[in-house]
Length: 238
Ligand code: ATP
Image (cartoon, rainbow, N blue to C red):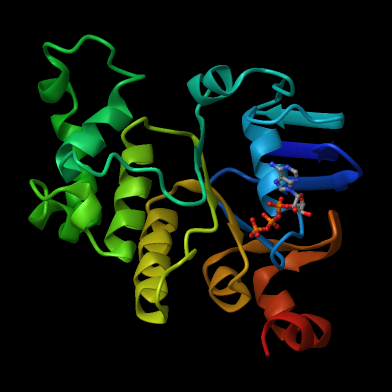
């Protein structure tokens, strides 16, 4: 569904992503694992049109999307859940979710009714959000905020979701909750690209993975095999 070929991207100086190729098959979960600064965020931002790559190819559903603005990429069904979540803190859980459907349902009148089936599905997947639908997003726990960020993305009915560093800033218990949520997303048939420095959880939840170091893929394969690879164990799994 997503194919990235020899992508190069960066900021002012050298490339931060130095010729990365990855593939994400439909209904699979693929992880990008690497330390801080390895280039994972730069890669996913380039795929989503938030950063203009310096070279390479990005194909989504067979169509070349590299160079398209982020809004156009999102309209094709490729959605990014950015690092740091970016919720509307003073708004309620439900208002945040409804805003996620806005690009899909631009007329505000019948809006809530049109989105009610989607809300229901999200509350079934994340019961905690349902219980807290009227609570201000800013007062949720870190793990709940991450689930809300994922829920808001689901409201747009994406074909592929990119989750950038969903464990960022969370206590270990909350990281566990978020990964359980990702697991149920995957079980529901969603296609997911997950960028994550928490290697153990990322490999446990994904089908395939790419290990990224200094802007390059240094290892790739099935997540189960990588989790047993001595080099991966030594560098990432303690
Ligand atoms: P993290 O988990 O810390 O976000 P990452 O693997 O996602 O790590 P990137 O954020 O892609 O890594 O960073 C790759 C390199 O690009 C780093 O050296 C970083 O300092 C640099 N970089 C990231 N964002 C910018 C920016 N806006 N301007 C200049 N350099 C940047």
